[in-house]
Image (tube, rainbow, N blue to C red):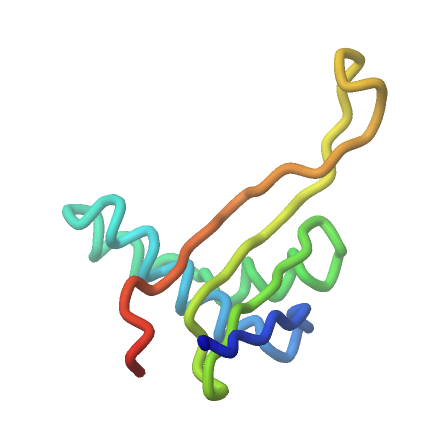
Length: 97
């Protein structure tokens, strides 16, 4: 059985989130790695988490971050009001670590 813990991210964990987002962006666009690494992802993450514009949750196994989901609030007439939307989603393929 795989014991995975899901924890709500606090601003103190913003560096962990920024590292995972960086890995995700590089995986999606490897040719932009230099630009991605020069972006202030940690500052952006910390600011967004502080303002409650997004909510983030880490998946952890043996206290190691193996996944991330971020959510933000949206509103639409067709949806009948306010709803949540997934902004980022990533999960390590190998759980052997």
